[in-house]
Image 1 (spheres, rainbow, N blue to C red):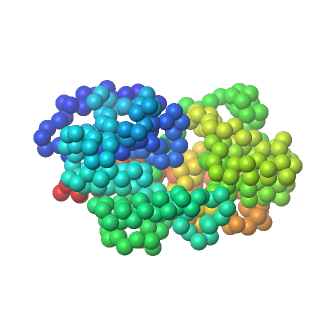
Image 2 (tube, rainbow, N blue to C red):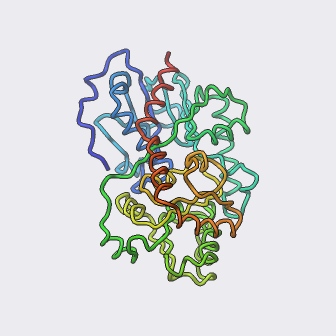
Image 3 (tube, rainbow, N blue to C red):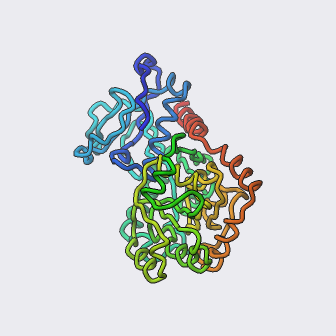
Length: 378
């Protein structure tokens, strides 16, 4: 975690400052992933922006139901946190804009409301698969999105793909949906090669990498089948780095059934420094997911200069541009052939991918987000 911001925030305060509340409940966790990473990195990029510091008075809003986990809150400076509960807390709301980076809608009457939409994959027909999601979650999330479409003053999406998906489902003014691509987030410091060897039993360039939730939703089963079919498992281990998600037992059973248990490494959640080392030393990054709203690992892999394979739908092609091997995530042969092609990516192609990834920064994301805040206040 970065050091707290040492500048005196109150020195910038005036009655003309825009009072902004960002819903930060996702940060009440010891291990950030997914949307929590978006919220964390956006907040820090905003706080590093001089224009933001002179125009905005920031408060981070945490649901009262997370009070028992209060020690995990992110507090980048003093007097930044506020507990919220329905229409009751805080008693003095005094807020001009409320930004919800996650599926928590703060229903206060006065503020302008902004919501970030990340991923609508669960509503795509081809993704109605066993263990992809639950009917209960799909219905709950749809109700949230329907409310957003009705009440939000502006919507941020993390890709053009997600914007298009939202407009297919809901009637909303397209000009009020602004695309703010995400940015590279990993630290400059990486774990040593000794850590790779000791903790993961791998050495540089002798393994293929997947990073993300280890879930049926991420197409891990088809990746395992293709890994076995390609024959590359005999010389290259497969590291699946990430926490276990829905359908993980199916994944474990598939590893056993394929007879590749000695070739597959499942380290669970890894620290950012360990993940950076895994990227930097991988032979290739395999990410043939069914659907991505953005696909931050795509940017990470390109930035570290390793060959990249992606699924050919969702936002993945948008984010990777023409700098990745694209495969049909539903076709084992396509993924298997793609693995071999990815390993044979040229140095020239890798350099072009790294240059392409340079556009994805949190500074760019913050600047676009600030413009949306400003437009709502006028």
